[in-house]
Length: 391
Ligand SMILES: NC(=O)c1ccc[n+]([C@@H]2O[C@H](COP(=O)([O-])OP(=O)(O)OC[C@H]3O[C@@H](n4cnc5c(N)ncnc54)[C@H](OP(=O)(O)O)[C@@H]3O)[C@@H](O)[C@H]2O)c1
Image (tube, rainbow, N blue to C red; front, top):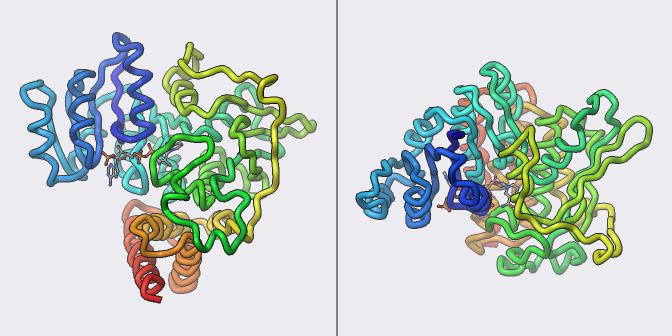
């Protein structure tokens, strides 16, 4: 039986992972499941899957988690330290699906046991890509991408030489505001941003898709994970979300990965890699689909992509600052304190301030420097948000 743990088990990716595990229950020995506020769901799944331990990130939820686990025999723990301890529990495969920079420390800890880390938490690569990759290398661990675009690139590269790759194209649905004017975007509401046209995902990534910050994170993720230079990586808007990514080779060939928008494909690929197994995802009917539509992204209406390119150019702590400012700006938008376009304004302002004050590109990248940059960027972003909400 394979020992597995799922970090972020109560979220969209976590639940899709559990769906796959449930279908083949006998094959897995579940070690740890972790969640945040939703302790009822965490306890239900931990009991059903016979996990050794259930961990909530929130210390004040420990009592509620204990109550929900009742006399099931599943251990309960809470807090950041408990998450790190859970990441040290031996497992053959660990899903990293906590949302945000909070996923970095448990992911780094998991890599130290030389395991396979299925990485949905793109923020880890954005904030500390070189750290994550070198930690994997020095402990003989493996990181498998779970983001659909990166899983697609990974699959298109099987059997190919990296040196022969000319370019990589990751697709973006364009989100609910793809055709909106700048003026309409200024007034876009939270409810409108939460209506994704093709993917069913957690709330935060859904809004990031509407603003293209999700694609901005993925641009950086592609650069950090595969090591392609920024000018080799392109973004193409593709509203149907059928083609997830394309890899172009030196002979002009373009290898595309197609599939229905269902994260269980990328999760299942990482779960069974290097084999392929049957997965419960719908099959594409291309005749029914008829056509595939593509268009170039608009950098004026969606400045996040331009900011991501600046991050890749600066390097160092720029990713940590970018991600933290984005997370704080997203919090303010979700609290309906600032407008939709204010998110990009805040991220750009924080990046400009911290680049000129601190020379982000030259800073050493350690878990401590990343933590400090993250804290400062969030504080600055919150101050900008407060000013904008009063204006
Ligand atoms: N959803 C997708 O289709 C998709 C696709 C590609 C990549 N991803 C990436 O996968 C990750 C998870 O996305 P998601 O959509 O599954 O998010 P989600 O539905 O919001 O779930 C997030 C998970 O993280 C937990 N969590 C929240 N804050 C936490 C904290 N401070 N510390 C520890 N755990 C915390 C949540 O617990 P509670 O819910 O119990 O509070 C939940 O288990 C993100 O990095 C996202 O970018 C998602």
